[in-house]
Each structure stands twice: as structure tokens, then as C-alpha cells.
Image (tube, rainbow, N blue to C red; front, top):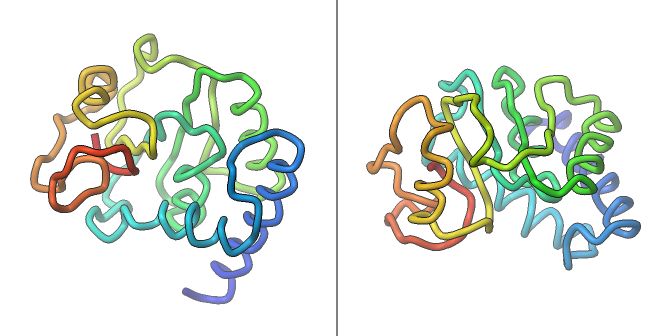
Length: 166
């Protein structure tokens, strides 16, 4: 990790903690917790998927901007969209995007069942179990899920809520 990436992550922590103190985005309220449990956890996906190979990615249930924001920072060539049904969460994420000067990402208020656009990669984190997600979000994927990558960010293929590939 270079100095710019480190500075970007620290800025994300500052911005997130500021908004988290105003609007309950997460129970995690300290910098070390955000770094470990949100940012580093969000970046785990890059260990099993070459994210730069994808043109457009969807973050399903973007709530507080994870994994959307860390992945957008680390992979600026990938156009990312965060989708969430809750307006206040989308508004906060869009404000954080502006504060972080991220131009390759947007957050929109929509339900995945009603969203018609398709994406190369779909990520999510702690939204639902993989078998539930594949049914609800499958139409948003340009290609079927790659079973060799595992579901929900679990290289062992375990079905549990976490970030990953749908």
C-alpha cells in the first residue's frame, strides 16, 4: 500500500466516523474498528477476484459505503454503483463520495428487484445469504456467478452473509 492509498483510507475513516456520529451507519465507532472491520474486510474480495478485469460493478445494499468506497478508491478504473433502498443511507454515501473526491462511483436509491441495468461484478456485504441474493440479484449480472470464486466472499464456497461475488 502506497502513501496515497494510506492517506485515502485515513480520509475515508475520518469522513465515515463523522457521518456515523450523525446518522447510525454502523455500531463500529472507532478508527481502528473502521479500518479493520470495514475497510480491510471490504478489500478481502480483491484476494479472490481480479477486480480490475471488470468494467462496471454494483455494490448491493451499500448502507454505509462498504465495500463500495474502499473498492472504488483502490480500483479507480472500475465504474461502481452502490444501490440501497434507504434514502438516508444513499444520501450519506453520495455526500461521502463528494467529500472523498471519488468520481468513478455513485450511489442510487433503488431496489435490486426493480433495477434493470446489468453489471460485470456484483458485490455485497452482510446483506443476505448467497442463495437469497442470487435469486434477487441474478438479473443484474451480465454473466452467471462463477462458482469457482465461491459465494459471499468465501473462497471455500460457504453460504454466509459477507462481501463477495453474486
